[in-house]
Length: 327
Image (cartoon, rainbow, N blue to C red; front, side):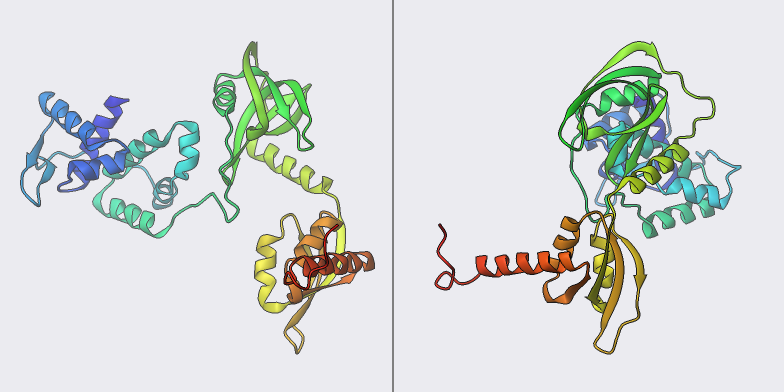
């Protein structure tokens, strides 16, 4: 809202001796032209703002204009200064509100606390994307967000992980962001379910209200859902040898893999691992992808599969003159 933005501008100018229209625009996520119009509106309304011309010019407030915000502990200020990632705020339509809200918070603090909070923002940054960032779209996200905000049931068409589409009437209870992927936590026939927002192909709000359980806790529900999902994954135990310098890479890249036991490096710099993959196929891809830097010890059928795939890959990538004719 414009009123919030005007107040945020006043508080920004209170925090800084002078700011250009471009600097204000960048902090609030609007255009410099919008800031110029807002400055004019503030001036007409009697706010103590004035412009200074020249290379070091900008907008300022008359001396003595100040508000105070008290009652927050240093740890509370620290937690509020660490904003949610911009992408998630964009998804919720709250990016500008977050920017103006933080300006109001910081501007109302005593000088020492404000400097500490601003220094923290320059030293800690929360990136929710992770190394496997996804740009997947969720066209029905706005509908589901409205259903959650308004406590309304929704009729959805959902594509399951196996590709089959199903229709459900759900009672949305909350939204969860894992990295940059959104999920909808909802009740169906009295049971809690989790739906990946990008797989909701169609959604429509219904007139029926959501009956929210009195003891419902979104964080606890999500943790229980994650535990149930992990327990349902296929289990494929493997013993393997791995070059020690690649352990960190493997732990970061082998998705849904549990490292049950890791030996100390031997004299040649190799580790023996007991790991549990989702399936034989995933184990084959993971170990084969490391080439000569990994070796499957057991099960024997996995060794045979990797050997077969490695031979096929070697033949496929042989120089053209050496390759066996196809067909």
